[in-house]
Amino acid sequence: MELLLYQVDAFASKLFEGNPAAVCPLETWLPEEIMQSIAAENNLSETAFFVPDDNGYHIRWFTPTSEVDLCGHATLASAYILFNILGHKKEKIVFKSKSGPLTVMKDNDQLIMDFPAQPPVICETPKEIVDAFGRAPIECLRSEDFIVVFEREIDIESAKPDLEQLRNLDLRGVIITAKSNRYDFVARFFAPKYGIPEDPVTGSAYTQLAPYWANRLGFKRFSVKQLSSRSGELTCEIIDDRVLISGKAIQYLEGRIKIKT
Image 1 (tube, rainbow, N blue to C red):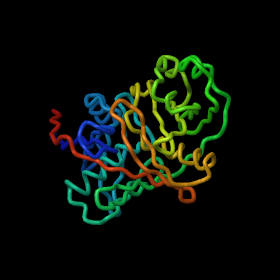
Image 2: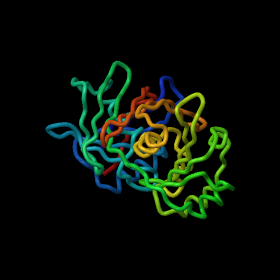
Image 3: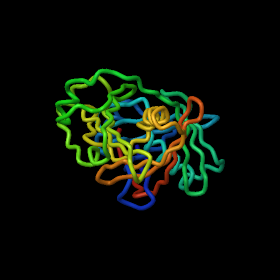
Image 4: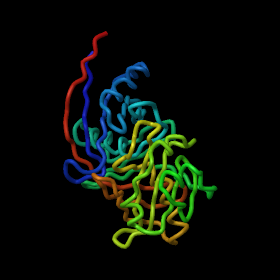
């Protein structure tokens, strides 16, 4: 069995920035254990698989250790491959997923993802978070992930969390965020229990961050930077109960997977 495989730097306008994702187009679903093994072999934060149907595509995402319900950057990467390599002619793609229908639109070199908002709710700060960062945040919330709010941008830039502490938490990961002078806000994302010590740019995080910052700042469109070592820039906008997340992408490689059956 031979499969196409692409690697794309998502939320980037040039190579070696943004968040790399693997994309594997399929005609029909592979056994789950094979998809998980491919994701582990790729050893990227996410590998996306999609299959066509009459009205679009079904999409699934795997980290090196497990399947997840929602991933932004690998969805962006999949749309980039469909629009630019596989000849998708329409200006919109609808992906069916475990998180419902996800739409990606093309606007020149920008890709715009339409995702469901996941507003976080205030919670007590888990002891593991205080221990991991060596300080208490000014606020802690939870949704798909913990949202940990610090006072200053430098707090986000300089953070060196104890990942073993974060591994013990009951949610997918931890997003740290603060207001910024250069952008509306900045963020970083850690998910060590899913095999992702730090994710370079995390599209799905903004389904939680955009509702939080909309409530705090009083507006609905944001310019954002994720302050990982690779870094990445994007815009996000709240429209009703959806979040539009926009960014660019660029292809890094094309290859073939050969699996003996």
